[in-house]
Image (cartoon, rainbow, N blue to C red; front, side, top):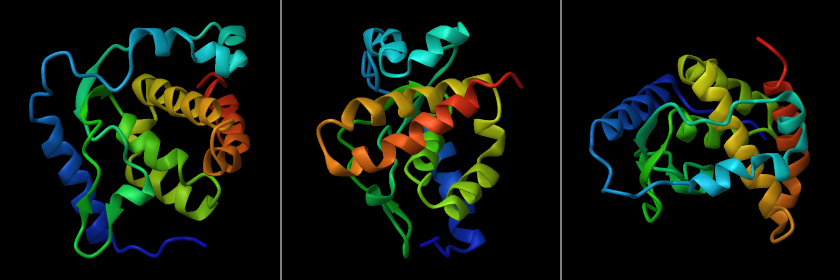
Length: 162
């Protein structure tokens, strides 16, 4: 079922994520190791076939686990801060989008609200990171198993030259 959230909530979420990026992440605290980024083609072989550069060009302070179970509606709050730190630019928006893929109307809204963050080289890499995470986790739990086909399909779309 699509979410019905007002424009103020979306605006507040963008503001909250922007403010978070202004905070320095703890030294050495990153959402992903270089090893995980290098293993993306293991989970999404089409990434290797496409010859995608997996270099993270920009790390920004992020919540780093921004899926729907970690966001409240009224009032807006972000929960579960145990993984916060530096993440690839666009990662928070990419996570929220990836966890919306099973509900196309909600996924479209996330893409609309965060178009400036997602529709560029950094955002495409952030999408590949979260899609690889979902595919990797699919063997361990039913939520990710349900999302994995959507993540695989979307990763293939991300790989189409812009």
